[in-house]
Image: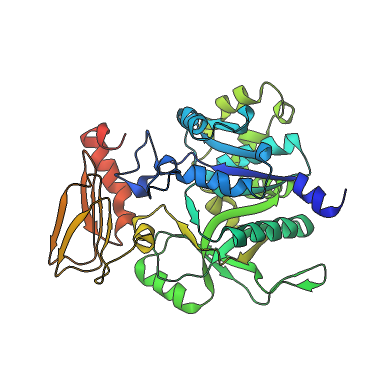
Length: 374
């Protein structure tokens, strides 16, 4: 077996599909969050698009879905060809650090030499050919450097809903070859305010964090043990249970006690083993209304409309309107830079760019009546 075949046979993927999608409220609800929605009427949900994209570079039997138990039936419905044992169900939402720790240790028990691609389920990639090339490069670098390789996107506007990565010069070397688009990582910055986002973008040193990681399972486990000690103590303490019939029950018992923290905060911001590949692949995180606005076709005054067939924008500019009734006439008079979203039971109107405050709004809406968020 040559090196390329060996790498391919050891390559796994975990698609993170357990989030509740609060930033995409009110379209995304707890019972049916954004990763399961066909928001752009393409015939595929975001999860289905991600699964199809990964199938083209990783064997389907080595693609796993990490999700919450309440979404298991939705995953099976949307991905009927997924092997039965390839859904890892979590009993509680404990954010990405615990999800990645669980999935990584599960794969390690199957194949200790595994290299794993960790990817969100709710991102769009328009240049899939470049994406597959980058996954191959990242897997190669992760194999031969014992590093965690992440993807960084050159920012095109000061997005406040994304994390940012600062890259260091010069590019790294692998096997004596200088990689012109692969850099050591200096720091991560999570979701800055609008002024800081502008400064980061204009500096030329920062990239959007695509939230996609590639590494050997043993490297990830080592970094989790080093930096996310509480998660490691909860999940890794019983080494004999992994890969056995008792693993699922064990996870059901210990997972609720894991801390609720993201993998970026818990590990990536602290690790000294991170490389970043500059990725130009038509990437967008569909997790924010701002990113949706960037994706959507606009009129001469930069107004974007989803769902409505008839609109009148009079003296109005740079708005995003999302309506679930195509027969409803939408009229905006003298309105600039607003987000207007209507569902059957919620009308949301806010300043476009202020969606980061929606977490508080969702909590208040839930306190009024759980139907607005569930």
